[in-house]
Image (cartoon, rainbow, N blue to C red; front, side, top):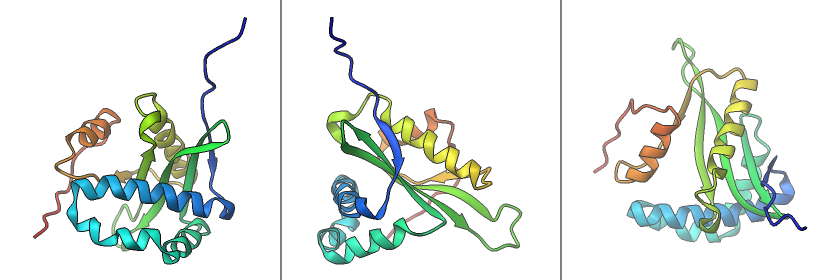
Length: 162
């Protein structure tokens, strides 16, 4: 009898070979964001350009940044962009782990895959010595806000835009 259950996706670090695919996923992510925030619409041409590919390549090789890819059956279906943010060393907490972006293709959502990506980013942050973590989302994105709150994140800073 065949097991019809799909295997869980695997998470791996992005390499330079993944740059174009990662750029394409980031473009999909930015398309979704631009529906919430019209400010990002002006950047969409950049994400189609070769310049964005060069930006991704530069980011992949940074020591304070890590992209983790979610892969199922040889196909990349999501990513998390994790980075170490540094503040002035005068602050008691001068380094934090920050999730810059997280994206799972729509057809693979509601399966716990984004939580898997967050958990992997948290492991990496802890290996880097981080004990504090941040993530940003839009005030109008109630679904995302609820998601982060379920994972234990608390609202602590509000940025106003005009």
